[in-house]
Length: 75
Image (cartoon, rainbow, N blue to C red; front, side, top):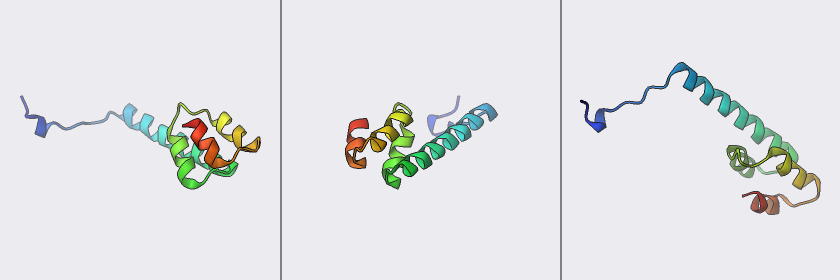
C-alpha cells in the first residue's frame, strides 16, 4: 500500500475531454458576458458559476441594470 504522499491522480481520457469542454464553455460564457457589458473580472467570475443563468445575467444589463448591481443580484 502506498503512502498518501505518494498517491498520484491520473485522469482518464474521458475526464480530460470533459474538463476541456467545460473550460471551452466557460470561456464562451465569459466572452458573451463581456459582450453584454460586464467587465472581464466579473464576466470570468459569472462564467465559472454554472448555477448562474447566462440569459438572466445578460438580460439584467439589457434591461438597464448596472453591471455592479447585476453582479450582486446574481451572486
